[in-house]
Image 1 (cartoon, rainbow, N blue to C red):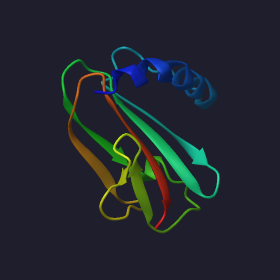
Image 2: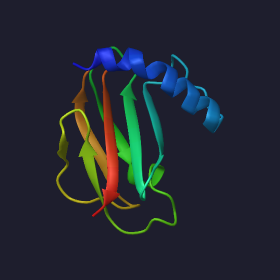
Image 3: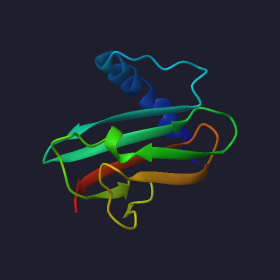
Image 4: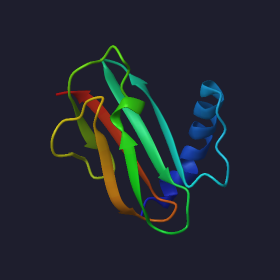
Amino acid sequence: MHRHWMTSLIPLCALQAKLLGTKPTAQDRVLTWAGPLAGSRYTALVVNNDAAPQQLKLFASSVLTAVDAGKYIARDLWRHKDLPGTYGHGDTLTFPAVGGHDCIMLTFRKG
């Protein structure tokens, strides 16, 4: 569904990997990048690197910093709407049946 975005994100992901000191490989079935935005907001990209659809999970603690306690509202950038509920360090966001080579991109803001 969003494969055209995947090709434009590859250079950005490569830069992010270089900055974080990690390098994704073809064997990784799920790739995750996350980072801060201005105004105590965060972003996360979760990629299904497999050809088959699969369930993707994102642990909120992998996105939010330790000093940012409290709950956050997650927004799906592809669907242009907020996900139900709020999310904090102990929470997991689950996305069932994400298409092969598709991705989820979110932003988080204080809830």
